[in-house]
Length: 403
Image (cartoon, rainbow, N blue to C red; front, side):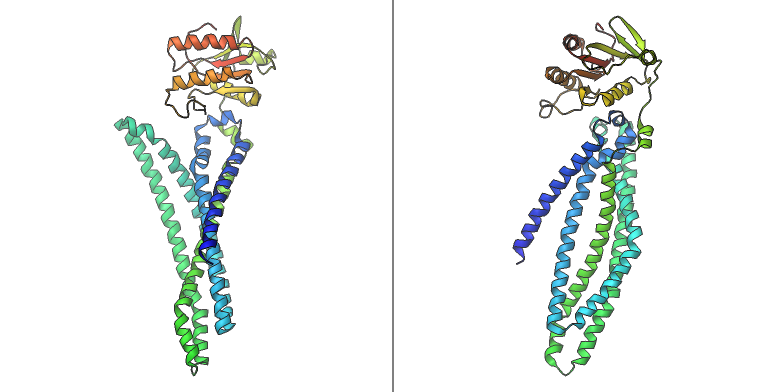
């Protein structure tokens, strides 16, 4: 009666966690897929990426665990109170029913603080996740200057998370203890009333004494229900947080995080001449032309918006174009199980892209930045061949090569 339902509950909760994470990932993809220019914003990445990497899983894991604990405690309380009602009369049912408004009042009084603490904890944990993620190179390279900078940031992030967690736990425990203390009065009063009423009945008095520990346990369970309900409410706040992180960016958010392009300084160069982005716009030159072929190189001074322009083209073209970023951090059937340098990853991704007949437009961001001359020449020839049947639009880091 206890072991089998408990085991079934654990199995079902485990399956629900995985299913929920899968659904959340699909929601994240549906909302943010193709937002290429936003992906270049470090601020936008810092506010969204931790939810995908860790926070969503932690929140969903806690959600289902708290739900399981809450339902188990609720069943326990109902079962035990029902047993007392059958054994000793309905007055104990009324006593425990009187506890419910007390718990609800404490719950309502604590709700605002619970929501605030939950939101602060989620924000500080996401900041901590981002800070920890940046520690790999700082630790393994070990430059004292950069390691000290990183340790200071980590110290601040840990302090913020520690303070938020401590305040939340104190709030929950104090509220739970007070609710349990107040809940004693109707139950203890009922026990005293029954004892006085049946003082000449040794059997009833014996039952009251024998069941006193059970009453204490029920009150503890009720207080735990209060604790778990407050935690559950805090988790609901965090669930809304992960939902917001997986939602489509608002228009003002897109404006805030998208980069800018100097359309006079950004040059489109191809065989036969070059033209600025402004002139291209004024003359109706459209790079997003179905079936276009050739090779276009985006050039300009540092900071003029070459990469931003390339990423904007990706957003405009959507699935018709394949973008390979400068850091080459994309999934590949080869790079999952092998260690490659950035240059090697670029070479592998380019070869994969050009061998896929579905790809008709390649958008390449500084693909030659980490390659030696021999690899540049080899891949540049392959891109020339691809440009005869498709279109290559690239930002070049190095000036070599025939363009």
